[in-house]
Length: 394
Image (cartoon, rainbow, N blue to C red):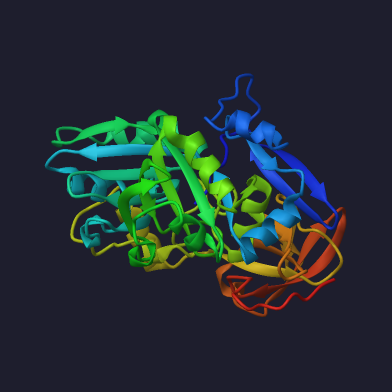
């Protein structure tokens, strides 16, 4: 999960040799800044508008170097623009089960769950993560969707005995990712990090700052997301950078998640797609024993079968599959490229799109129109990149 943007959408492209990155952004006169804005500027970051925030897209070494730093070492991302909602009260578990499609009752305290907030039609308001504490739950949403998701959740409160609080402005959030993430962080905390399982979290101090230490991420590498008080963000950032982590911007964050085939709101998923179409049926628990918003629509869709499916592809010709480029199957335009990049790890052009359900299988051939030329593409399995994958290109 990653922050994206409200409509209308425009694209901001940053190019480095043989690579490019597209940020979906909102044109807005007033951009918010995280507590690390000055730190990013001092490091020479290129700042761009992103989901209503002014965020670092890359640092002086460039996107390609940052991408490889995460795949081979450790990098740290500022993701403090994300939104967080706190839910307390005796009916908190039942309420969150109503407003999300996964099954909160399957979570033990200390557990994290990937889920989604849906419309009544079963389409996606936002994807999210749910954190279960002993006495509360926390829902983490994308930056551009914070206000929309908050309104959607509050509207469903009714007479349920819960207390809802938007704590987004109080929280700083850093993501430390890469095969050396645990080693770098272990120098800064007394918490025994090997005991923190994947998609679990603990409370502990990192560099003297009280944190929720979550073994989660959006890169396909081992890593942690650190939730701290907003006022502690700079101290925590400085300590992690001082411990050997490289600062990483949104450009490499996007190329890393694309190589893993992870969904990005506004690209692969939005209010026109359902989890079943997007290959996220595993987070939809239609049999969890309690109704949730959108469940009737998804039951009906599952019964009749989806008409399209999200797929990953590799471009066969020489081209760059940018977001929004037309996609053709059997001579008919069927969709657009949802995400596309020249994979830094593999050296080949990859992307995602939706194809008719009958064609959405590995090996299917179709075409992507790049700069007016239709280039051959082929459906491949996801994730595109797996540990140990060999680079195929120059």
